[in-house]
Length: 338
Image (cartoon, rainbow, N blue to C red; front, side, top):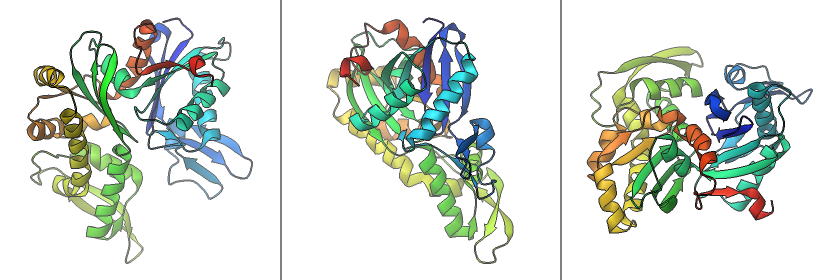
């Protein structure tokens, strides 16, 4: 991987960049803050994330990606450009860039990603499907005729795939992941306690006290928000049972999708997966008890990868060494005349 090769995990919740032999050089939220009066970017990444819910009316902090795809092209382009400049400095010659995309992305959605990267200054753009990048970043050899299953739960999408011989055998992609879980927690607390909490508070509760395998009410935390009846600030204590009740339907939907992929996988590969286990990657892999629940519901061992949040980004760096081998799930955009 040359010094000007850049790998980007362009996630709904965060953007992670690898560069040359340096490994991970940036890991920041996918948030852009801009001034509506001047149409200028105020901040990107961590600085913009701190502004969510705290800005005056004329400054807006937005996530330019929704459900794993670009919803605001101009803001995404500005964000990518700012991050590339941040990690490379002003003197970088035009880099090759590999970008991760969900496994079932449409041509229109992939075109938007490619254009954003090209306008940010790349000389050549590659797309790699997230399951391929995730399993490479988790440290597995996918060149052998051996089935491996990966479940990558990000911020906007959950990608599930069975991989063998450098290609995807079966896959599906759900527009259901971390952000949807946060929204479910907000709704549940609003309905049960009549308190409206913010996005960041819901995310903190998800990370801190979630237990989807055997919630017993022992994990608790206080959340603060606005009382919907009085209109005044208030705090309430919630437990892991509350969080489980809020997100259980979504979690079981993910597990049903895992079962669906297993059911359509050739039997020889299912035998391989039973031996090697299901690999969990992405931020959602760290949801308390999720690996145990998936194992119980499918009867297949489930393993959380090391540094699951960084797996996809690491995989983009590894992919540059395998340009001639990854014939499926990895595309040089010049071949498609974009």
